[in-house]
Length: 269
Image 1: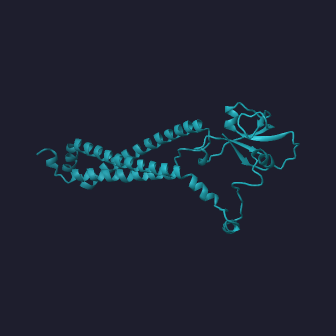
Image 2: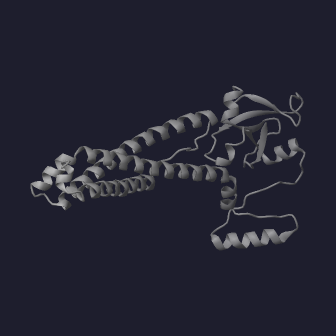
Image 3: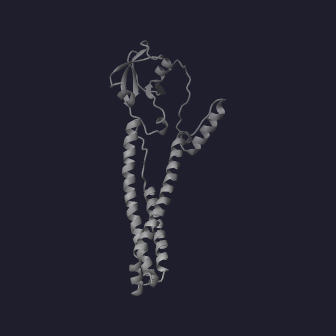
């Protein structure tokens, strides 16, 4: 499906040599190159229409609103589009650039008060409205991330408890040699923290590789430069912080269970 966008070009051309710009996906699928001649008609498949020359190929922008639509884009001169669409001096929507927030507020009031049926919106609000699907997906991914972190914390705690149980005799020997409980706890907590950091580094590496694979697949599938998966410094900082907190907590819980037991009991006597 071809979607025409109103675009006024300040060019002086003869009526016999009109030009258009087409979407890069249309150029790729229909094998169209710059300089090719096409027929623009109001009826699909009709040979009666205006002959135009392709003068430019438009690169698609990173707009989430375009992902859900598989339609092509064609840009014509304003008067040419009016003639082809037979729409007259009417438009469905248009964009107005303003200078500053105050000018934007004033423009909204003036346009909405001009006549019944006029409705003005900020471009930011429209972008948010059209991106709600991506917001839902983002929240879903955050929920999955929280569940994964909780599960990894439980897994880490189980590992530390198993390792501590295996070292009961070693800890008992250290206690009988005069090593304090705090020193034993510090060693176990340091080990748990190191284990958490190693797991965090591996997780970030796996996440980065997966993110690159997701972007390569979906950018090629939808033929768009939009970034579908992104690992930001804030995400990395959050992952490292949670890993340290959970690692320290797991180490403390495991060490407390061990140091509170008398050394002879640890030896099984």
